[in-house]
Length: 121
Image (cartoon, rainbow, N blue to C red; front, top):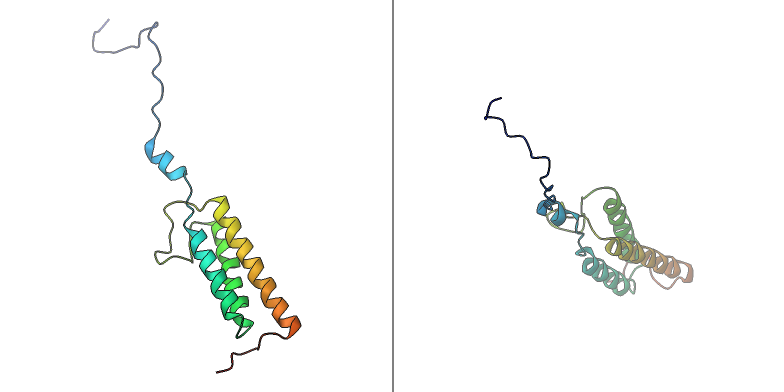
């Protein structure tokens, strides 16, 4: 038998696998979309005084952003447009809730004829 081969000993303890730090950093999710969604909702509520198109369009933007969050890592709400980490479920829920709220607000303005179609300058 040659001494060049290194066979594991039968009585050696198996070493525990080391956690992959890159995988653990990647698995954490981001909450960065929450403040952006809250600002867009507040902006839509303010601009709803002048026209119902503003909250409706911002609601659609948030709706498409939430759909993008569910499917890919593309982030239409950021300047870099690609997320290194996926958004958290809380962030996705806040974006969808803001979208539904703004669309409902725009619909209520339309039904009550409270907001104009175009803003009066």
